Length: 114
Image (cartoon, rainbow, N blue to C red; front, side):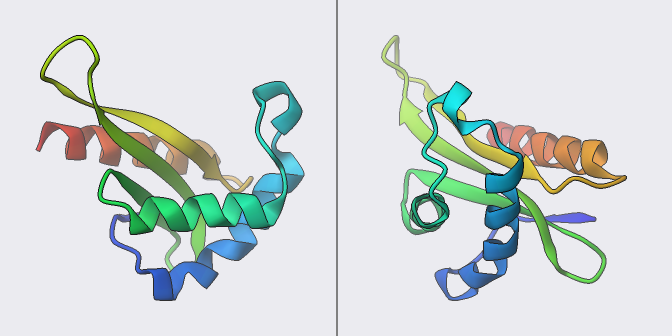
């Protein structure tokens, strides 16, 4: 498993199977999230296409997408600091799900320190 930070809009179709799996396993009503796959997919594309957001993508050894974590950047309302907030964090269920989820967290933390 590895993290791919840069994914192009041309490659976004690679995220579709994971986005559909997300819909099956997410309790969206409890989180106030719209579970319409097309809306979710549009949100993911927006994270790639915006200057104030990013999408960290988790791939397996076959280069298949198995997870992602989106992040929004913004200026802190309390000062001159830049802040980031997770905006979708999902890894498909499987034996390495916990490891994959932590790889995404570590990649985001490493990015934030740079």
